[in-house]
Length: 283
Figure 1 (tube, rainbow, N blue to C red):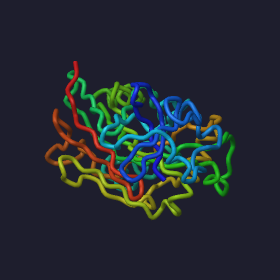
Figure 2 (cartoon, rainbow, N blue to C red):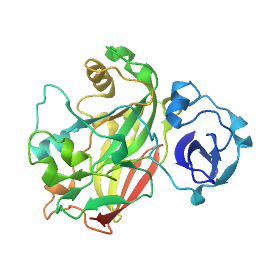
Figure 3 (cartoon, one colour):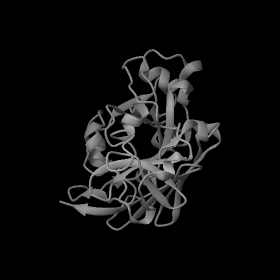
Figure 4 (cartoon, rainbow, N blue to C red):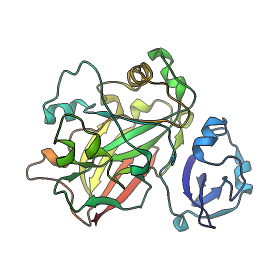
């Protein structure tokens, strides 16, 4: 079942289920089951609803404005160079531990919202990724138990301002410009997907395939990531881990595959839908 955050008919943020081309409002402006999708995860509502959601107010999916799948996560933990193909193209092989950086919640945007390329950069790049959302408090989680802590999965585009990212050893500045964290369109319950290692991630720019990989190709697996991250910070329901991008980013292409104004970037993952954002130049 596809859950999403979006703008309600009265213009306020809400969340709900997208089914058969309609968006069913389960937030305060609709059925009022929980304030946000994060709250629905916290309250154990996410992933448990049956057909009763169809009695909620609804609109055509084509008429809604999507918001980031989880609009208010307490933490967004991103993992760098976590596919072998990306390690090879970047020259960062044989990692001993995951490369970790943080993204701020207010840097995110939803499906079909613009990817905001700052006018001060000439090195704006895409990174198609899969994100997972934590379903319950997680601290010092063992690898063998890690999947029990995953509420659901979504597509993510960890857009990067490369000149800011590469100016120093810490990447946070280049990963937190406004409108650079595409998240959605849907958050799909883990129970609906089965073995996520069988999912395929594909990133397209103006229809051209730039990245394609199986989730099974992750260097540090999802259980390893959850165990590692929960080893140093307490994770709460609604927190997000963005698991890494495959090879094929624009920075390492010959000729350059970096983004320009008007480029359309799509991140499609089996069972999770297609996240689509168009690059907009901003001052």
